[in-house]
Each structure stands twice: as C-alpha cells, then as structure tokens.
Image (tube, rainbow, N blue to C red):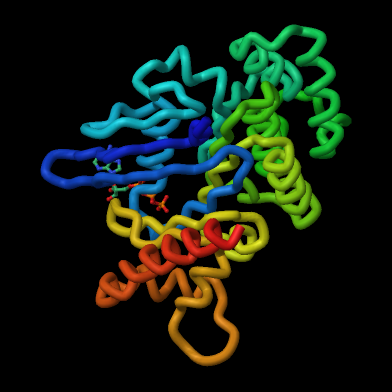
Length: 269
Ligand SMILES: Nc1ncnc2c1ncn2[C@@H]1O[C@H](COP(=O)(O)OP(=O)(O)OP(=O)(O)O)[C@@H](O)[C@H]1O
C-alpha cells in the first residue's frame, strides 16, 4: 500500500491582485523527513507555510497534511505544529500557563500535557523561568517557549520558521538536536531558514523557492554537486546559483537529474 505523504501540495497558488506570491507549487514530502525550505526574501516561503497550516486560503490548488485537506481546518489542526517568525504568546501568562493553554486547545490530556511540558521546559533550560510572566522573558526565552508550544502535542508535521532566531549557541544546538530527534520519531519537519549550515546538517531534502516557484529540489549533496565552481562547493554556492535570475534554465536540470538519480537509486535498492 502506498504511504500518504506527510505534506502533499498540488498546484498550490496564492495571488494578490495580479501578482502570484506562490504559483503552482507541488510538494510531496514523506513522513519522518526534514525538508529544508529555502528562498530569497520575498520568494513566498511564509505565504506557502501559511497556506499549508490553514492560516491562508489558497487562490488555487490543494494541499494535504497527513492526509487531511487544509480546507478542513478542524481535521488538520491536531496533526500540525507551527512556529511562526513571531511566536504568538500572551504577555500576561507565565510560560507554563501559555503552553498548558495551547496543549488544552490541542486536546492533550492534562497529565500528559504536564509531563510533556516538564520534559520540554527542562530540555530548553526554561524550568527555572516556567512560572514567570512572559512579558519578563528575553527574546530567546520567548523563542524557546514558541518552539515548545509548537511541539507539545507531538504533532505529525511541524513547521518551523527560523527556529534558531535569537538563540544562543547552546539553545540553537538544542533546537538542532530536537529537530533530528523529531524526525527519528517519525515527525515530519518543514524547516524554513536562511541559515544554510543548519539545513545542510539536518535536511533530507532541500527545496529552493524563487519568485513563488520551486526552482530546485534534492538532497543537500545533490544540490551542492550541481553548484558551479571549482573545488568543494557549499549549499550557499548552490543557493546562489539556483536563485540567480540568469540561471533558471540551469536550475531546471537540477530537479531533472535529481529525479533520475532517485529512480536509479530505487532501481539499485
Ligand atoms: N498580504 C499581502 N498582500 C500583498 N502581497 C503580499 C502579501 N503578503 C505577502 N505578499 C507578497 O508575497 C511575496 C512573498 O512574500 P512572503 O512573505 O511569502 O516571502 P518570504 O519568502 O517569506 O520572505 P522572507 O524571507 O523575507 O520572510 C512578496 O512579494 C510579498 O510582498
């Protein structure tokens, strides 16, 4: 039996007036993988994530999260977690109250929520501050609370927009370790970031969005192999190559060769 992709988008489009912020986007992301979503400023990453998380209605196309249509918010919401660029937090709540509130919205039983919150607060070094009001938190503490509330209900799919933003090196490492652990536990992580080494380290597949369309998709190694230049090439070289306005034709061959390789690999295996 074919497995349902964790994230499945078909012709996803968002238009503002005559301009398409996202145009005819197809995605098929298997569960338990990390998908690194890259693109220059204004490429349409946030618009895509907002459509996939039911917060923005597509102008055309469809998307399914763990098999549920994004048009059916009630069906999709329990399966997903979302850390937006600015985590939505209530200043007047304590960190613990905030995450308890979100866990309640996700119908997590109280005892389970309490155990998960203790565990996640300990992991993110928030235990000592859990009972302080959020308006006394630093930027990094708010970011960590936002991450905890995105994953407290153990969602099947989690969308993380710049998860290491504002975090010190230790907290940033905890986030990277958490992403790897989530994927190992069969959670799908959709990771949008401009920090390419993080994508290089964690992503199974990288998709590069440019001007509302996917211009390259493949493993970090695939993309690096196709970057121009001598010697060892980085994901940054690949990113710059595929988002260079004059080079979009060359980019088409990235996806093509990637699928050929994938086909060859599955024949091998
Ligand atoms: N509400 C809106 N009305 C009109 N245009 C919009 C609206 N929201 C986004 N856009 C446009 O859609 C395009 C994509 O924006 P989006 O925020 O998705 O980009 P992004 O890839 O997330 O960028 P960044 O890396 O800077 O966060 C941009 O041209 C933006 O101006």
